[in-house]
Amino acid sequence: MLKRLLLLLSIGIVLYGMICFGSSSYADSCSSDSLYTSFGGNTATVSVSCTTTTDGSRSTDGSESDSSGSTGCFKTDGTEVACWNGEYWWSYTLHRYCKVASLSADDPRWNQHLDSSGNPAGTLYQCLLFQDENIYNLLNYLYFWADDTPVTPPVPGTDPETLVREAVVSLGLHAPEVGVGAYVYPKYEDWGLSWWVGAPMWMWTNNDDDLQWGNHTLTDSDGNLTVTATVTSTSIAFDPGNGDSPVVCDSPGTPRPWDPDDLLSHHSPSGCEYTYMKTNTLGDKDSRFTVSATVTWTVTWSSSDGQYGTFTTTTTSTDNPAIHVGELRTVLVAPK
Image (cartoon, rainbow, N blue to C red; front, side, top):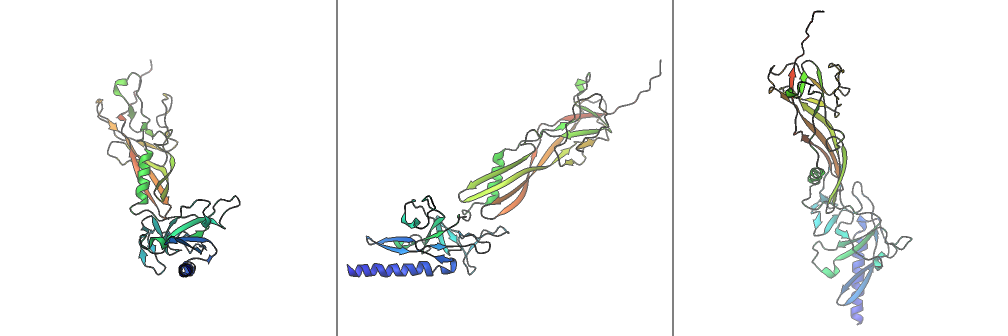
């Protein structure tokens, strides 16, 4: 019995040294906490608790991030290591594979780390002494306490931009509705939408529908990775349908209601307009220009692993107005 106790004490001292002093280069200080390791039906108690701090751009949980968006995981000597080992991630600060410990609030390992209400404060990390989780399983777990919130590297195979793009698809942006300042003139309904050569034709889309033109903020998660993105309509390009270059506007345009007293030469307040300089085939009701529109959406995103980026996506109109462009002629009538 005495030999067994001496053996347990020796193992406890060795483990204590491995935990506190072996990790001293990755933690600021160690204080009393409880680590329980069971083996052979007996229990040895080892005290350890380490408080970690941020080293440069590396967070206290150990994940490494920088402004370039790198998600590589490294040892202090620069050697690259896998970011994940099963459910454990590589902690640069603790220099081990760790995970957040699943411990009840009354677990003695929370001693000295409770708030004024008696609830656990900070984070307890369960770390692997050996990189292989299955080696010496009974002696393979170390516990560290830190006053931080863990930020883990992304799960292997998870690409943040792909996650953002999937969220944008789920948003369900609408095809823009094309509005044009052409009219179906009374008594000439069989000509459909008509406009006149040399007069500015206003163009717009429906900004009452924020999925046609608007601004959105998205958040999505996959495992340990969380992304946030803003999706903003930044331009709309109207194709007049006659072979000319599209008219690009940075606003949704201004609707022009029917007003027979409004001057044809009146310009759009938003500047989003097009002036046809050639007519369709005169006298041919089927000779028409089809106007279409494409909205460009700019997506700016960032992820919990420090990556960020910008890309664009577009939506294109499907129900497009066809316009017959004619000409107005002045007829002089002799006074009676």
